[in-house]
Structure formats: structure tokens, C-alpha cells
Length: 123
Image 1 (tube, helix red, strand yellow):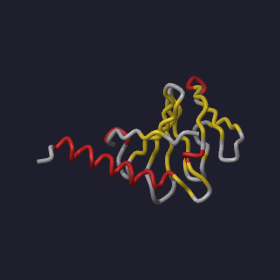
Image 2 (cartoon, rainbow, N blue to C red):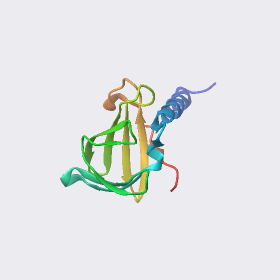
Image 3 (tube, rainbow, N blue to C red):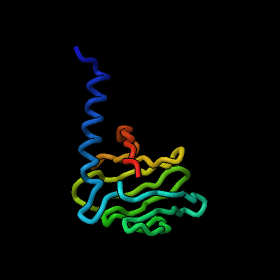
């Protein structure tokens, strides 16, 4: 018999995988953007965009055509998805020189969503 914890883990993985579909847009993907540095004191971050150019972003800026930067705090950037499909929001975490994309399910407030950190593909 499969335990509740195993079923819960499998369900969380399936939700995470379904959310990753919406991280891509017709013109690009969050996986194609390299988040370089976060300056939380200034609420700004540096990214290498889809064209390979460096760009400084701040709350209110739009990246990958459908993601609006909502907040920048130490170690993470909160993005909101304006597209109809995919996750409602994505948290980008910078830890130990790597970036992690954590999709938050549609209609779930961030504090109620399951923790499902997914590493971005190596660049």
C-alpha cells in the first residue's frame, strides 16, 4: 500500500510539471533568461535577457513578454504571469551561484502553495 506521503509527493511533482508548461511563451522562456545578481537594497536585479544583453530590472518591469516583476528581496525575485495558461506566479531564487524557478499554481496565494523548487536547465 502506498503511503500518504508518497501520494502527496507524487501529486506535488505532477502539479509542478504541469506548471512548467506555462513558463515558456511564444517569444521565449524564463529558462532562457539568466538571473545574474540581486541588489535587494535597491529592489533591482541584473539579468541576461533573451537577446544576450544585460538588463537591470525592478518591480513593474516585464520580462519574457508575460512575466511582471512584483518584488525583489534578498535571494529571490517574485514574478507574476499575465498569460492565461501556466502558473500564476514564479519565484526565482538565486542560491550558491544557481538559479531555481519555483512555479506557484494558478489561483493559489503564495503562502498556500506547495514547495516545488525546480532548477533551471544549465546554461
